[in-house]
Image (cartoon, rainbow, N blue to C red; front, side, top):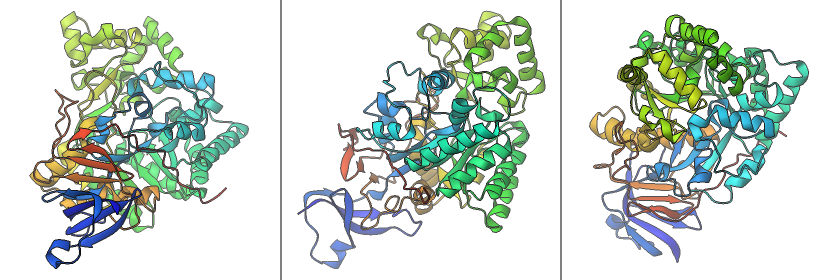
Length: 538
């Protein structure tokens, strides 16, 4: 007998097609049979060791988080209910140009400090890898959900060039090409950049184009966090479209938002830019999260000149009064490139997490609120926090616009990504609620997307971008990474004031045919593994 039959379930298969009623049979980690309208037809119904009555539930492919920051969380927390409970069965790591492979000892130390606000210090992790392949091997020991990896361009640059603002030499560029190629050969699905983060931001377009040509040769895609999401955002999007065209490389625009007051109501301009690119033959997709607030590190707001040289140099500059005053002027008056060219509004910057427990009083307050309690200027408070917490503070940035969020998620190349940062006392609720929020708020409550179209954006379309031939659809022969949810009750429990509240209406999640969530509770199954895509070139 087969392992499992899911009876009388409404199948939303990930293609965008209309749902249908069926019995779905799973065996050996794959979907082996789909018997449509089995009960109504009166035919011999499939039997299995276990039968699950799914009347009233929807069966869909497992959700694919196209922008995740679980690079250490998957190793640190075997439970990982933040994602598993949402129905996420695959996360794409290595985002925003900074992650933990490929590295040497020196580079690893700088990266760990640079993105402690995303992933924690890593003091609880045994970093027993250095290459991309070794990191993927580490994931293969057993994790909560599957994970794919992007070669992080900023980490590659740190390894070869360092943290300085200068052009790479021809020899250095050749070595960066080799490292990107090696990462793709070892199983990465593409390359990411963080072009407002040090040191990836120091790469000129010619350098990025050369690396993207390597990515294209291996069948991967380029995923940039581009140079601005505020002032100059539309120009930054156009820059990435043109760069990918020059390189002949597929493009996936990370967390494709239009934020800050300068971009209110401007989503149609972005969508027109994308439509023109698609009409000319460009291969472009994007991801978004269904929230208006952003999330990053407090240090990310600093101007690029203040970040040159890496974390130690940043701290040195912050402790020098004259240099710190220059930083304040760039932040508050000019609009630093780290803050997307917009003068910082300290009322919109909420501290969401700190590294040092003694600084917990800052969490949940805006910088201006904390400054007022101390009777000091906001920059004084921000500067002290950066220095005392060694650049670790994470922030929520309340600068988005709901009309832009809705318009972009309607576009035909849209996919879902949480950009979920799990670190901090009060993280962004998107880390725990992105996927049920799409289904509950934007499908059932607001009708922005149909259920079938929304599921396609969370499953089939991401799998196509990742070029995974046997994932992302409910189809015979495909892997049994599946979600069962109640369309009448599915909702994000997480909110800004209670960000770790679990979702409702998702009673079952399967990975490789094994129950990761059963009757709404996390099992002890660790069915996740690294998902490697075989390169098309060698």
